[in-house]
Length: 154
Picture 1 (cartoon, rainbow, N blue to C red):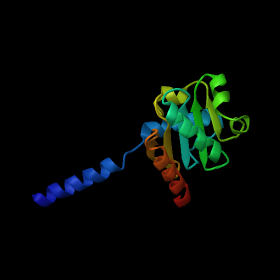
Picture 2: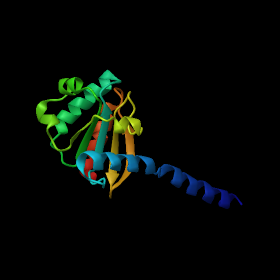
Picture 3: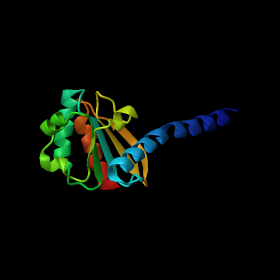
Picture 4: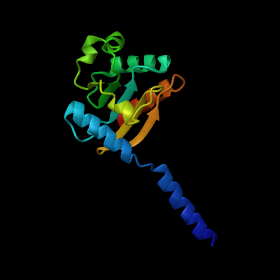
């Protein structure tokens, strides 16, 4: 009897740690199709942020985007309607890159891919999200380190 309970526990533990991101996959695909004309999640990392919210979080994220804008394994989705804010935060050269998405219709915010408070990174393998991490001013360095490790390993 104990063995049965142990097996059930282990199966449930494995299922709960393998969180499926069904809704997030669909919403991210919708945004990718709308802005990039790509219906598959063929990049390794999708970094999504709003223009408002946590100032320090956004500051760290903007620096990361500016530094990594030429990485073709990443897509940067900026959700916000203020073009003035967008121009103030990002260089023209960055805004003109093909992997920089200006989500002026707020699809990412409305579909809960990102909150107003914190940016979020989605990690993909074989066209599916396998992990996601919120970016705060406390964990920004560790999340961006994780991004770099994920890009190197995958």
